[in-house]
Amino acid sequence: MSARDLVLGRLRAALGPEPAGPAEVPREYRPAGRPADVDLLARRLTDYRATVHRCAAGEVARVVDDILGGRRVVVPPGLPRRWLPATVEAVTDDRLGTELLAAVDGVVTAAALAIAETGTIVLDGAPDQGRRIITLLPDVHVCVLRADQVVAGLPDAVGRLDPRRPLTWISGPSATSDIELDRVEGVHGPRNLHVVILPPTHDPAPEPAADAAVDPAPDAAPGPVA
Image (cartoon, rainbow, N blue to C red; front, side, top):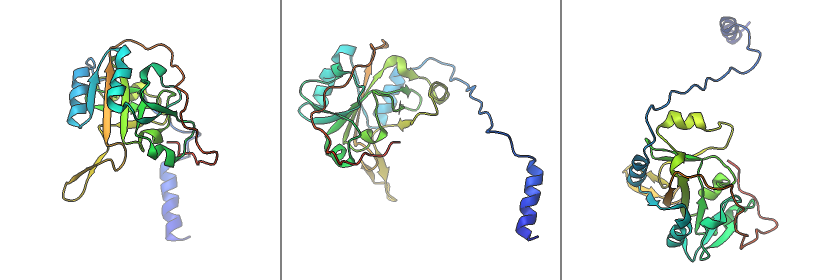
């Protein structure tokens, strides 16, 4: 018996028999113990160089028009049509290829929730949020969020989210820095993040997005699913 086999044998003996299945993960997360503070979320987002817009539910299209009017945007299939002004050319993501996604000017999505304490927006791949790749390649991301989707702290968010879904955590626009601490934006995602915060009223059931203005090429390779 080699020394390697001897060591591994002792480790197996110390660990005991292998479990019959995966261990149960405890999910009784301790909540933050305080109400969610939407004003704190807005301050955190501003600190991270995101732009915060607060408006009524019926004014989303106007805000999107101010940000992306006259430009071409990609939208997830389940985004409500009423959020899109007539001035934008909306391309519905139907497994669009990376070249087409990189060529659009922006993306408009909803969100799963937001964390006030950390200023973080979380997307979970729902129909009104879409694939992760559509929020990485365009230069501008407009994210629409209801105030009742804001939670106080990270434990509150983890307890509400489904860990089996593809979660994307966003804290401000994409930014990085080199060894001299020179800040560079847009390397790993959009350079501009706009967060539209609506009052705490529930929207109706999601509507289908506006018809795609540009059809993907038949042989366009789909982007990766995160």
